[in-house]
Structures are given as C-alpha cells and as structure tokens.
Amino acid sequence: MNNIIELPTNSQYFPQESDLYFDTWERPAYFKGTGDKYYEDPDNKHIIRMLDDKPYSLGVVGKNYKKLSTKPLCQSIEQEYIKSLTHEQLNGVQVVDKTSYHGGLCIRQYIFPNIKAELESRVSDVAFRTVIINGYDGSSSFKFYNGAIDFFCTNGMVTGIYDMMVKKHTKGLTIPKLTDKIKSSIDIFYKQAEQWNKWIGKEISDEDAKECFEAIPNASERFVAKLERQFHIECLSHGRTVWALYSAATYYASNSDGEFTVRETNQDHTASTLMHREKQIRSWVSTDEFQKIAA
Image 1 (cartoon, rainbow, N blue to C red):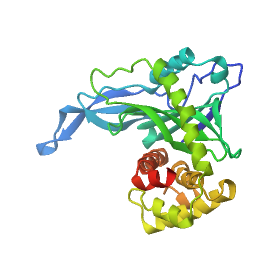
Image 2: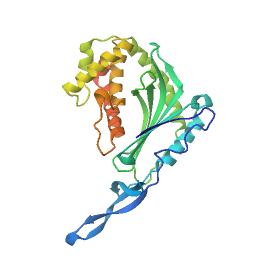
Image 3: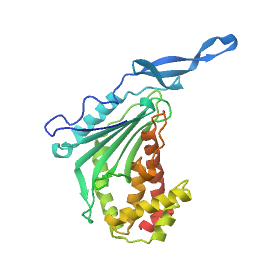
Image 4: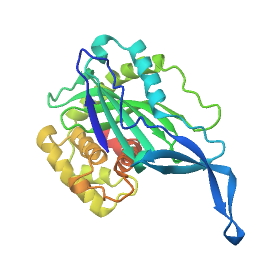
C-alpha cells in the first residue's frame, strides 16, 4: 500500500490518521503435541491486528519481544521535528506511508521540500527526508535514518543516509531525544550536496558504468543490462556522468514497475522489497568500485 498525504500549509504539520495507525494485541502462541493436543508455547507469542473484521497474526515473536506501536512512535518523533525545525522548514512537509505483509512492516517517509539543496545541473533539486521503519513480525528492528530525495525523478537518494538509529524490539527499548540528531543531519545534508555537485560534473564512459554496476551485490548479467539501459535514459537529462550512474541505481531502488517490476504475490511485499533494494544500493555506494569512479 502507498498513501501520500500532502497537508495544507495552514494546518497542523503532520497527519492525525494513517493506514499505519492500527491497534495490535499480544496473544499466546500454541504448538501441537501428542494426541492432537495443543499446548501454550511459553517462549513465543502472536502479534495480532484486525484485518477485514477478522483477527490476523502479523507474526510470532519471542517472549521478550517488546511491541512498539507505530502511532505514538511517529507522534513522538514529530514532536522532535516541531522542537528542532522552523515553521518555514516544516511548512509543506509530505508524508508517505507504506506497508508490507498486511502491516507486519510499516514504513513512513517525511519529505521536507523547504529543506533543499539546489544542484548545479539545474535539472535536479534534492530535499531532506527522514525514514522510519517499524515492524510487528519480529523480522525488523525499529530504524530511523535521514537522507535525501531527488525532486526531478522522485528517486529516494540513498547515499545521503546518516545518523541511522537501530533499536531491537526488546525489553528496555526506548527512543532517545532526537533534536540534536535532526539538526546535525541537516548540516550533513548540505555538505553532502557538495559531493553530489562533483558527481554532476564528472563524466564517465559506458564501460565505466557497466563495471561499476557489476559491483552491486548479487548483480546478475541481466540485472546489469537493465541498469545500463536506465543509465542511458538518465544520461539524456544529466549527461554521461557519475550523477546519471547514481540516478540509474536509485531509480531501481525506488521503483517497482517497468524494467524493475516487483512480482506481485498475496504477501503484500512491495514496500519491503524496495527497502531491501535501498539497502543494496547503499552498500554499493560504499564499494571500492563506486568510490573510485566517484572520486
């Protein structure tokens, strides 16, 4: 599911309702013993929500798992934004909500169009963004990180990820104050724009692009060929540059259709797949191959 909420500039900054805001409960887990009898499992439990007016298990988790509800989590972080940012910076904030596995994984993205860097190409502006990830199925820790988004093609730019915070769902889980982290991340965002401008000005060859794409983790020959075709599309707007190379990779990480279609199943996994793609490209940006060509 993908729901974009754009608030009027004179309203509250953040939405009060969302598909991410649903109630959950903990219920005992059982296992089948001898003689077709079922016994309560002392080491595990279900996390339950209502779906289509029926109870639905989001996952089986361990007994020490601490459930962290998405609504108070988001509202707490939004209060940190209100403390940290000016009215001008908050004005027009966009909230993008996505779920996978029927709510087992919840992803919220805040995009701040008034916190932006104008790049030298004049084709792209990039805006500051924050991503929150929360899960109920035991497979995902709570994550909070900052990055950027390209206004030209709405690619979620994954190189500008910094101050990532990861918290496991265990007893004692608390979310620290984020005011200083938010302010420092914005400073890093503007410094990162200097690097992006260097990428815009650095030309590369088709051979350079192919060799660099081949360094993406688990890249097949067919996958590399798809990225090469996307690179040529990006070159029409950005020239044959490192920026076009990078834009092709972030296009793959941000889109679930066309050449990079996510196969549909009844598991509602598109948002999860894109999250893993973003992690894959984030890892690629750190490789020697990319760092060498981008230097």
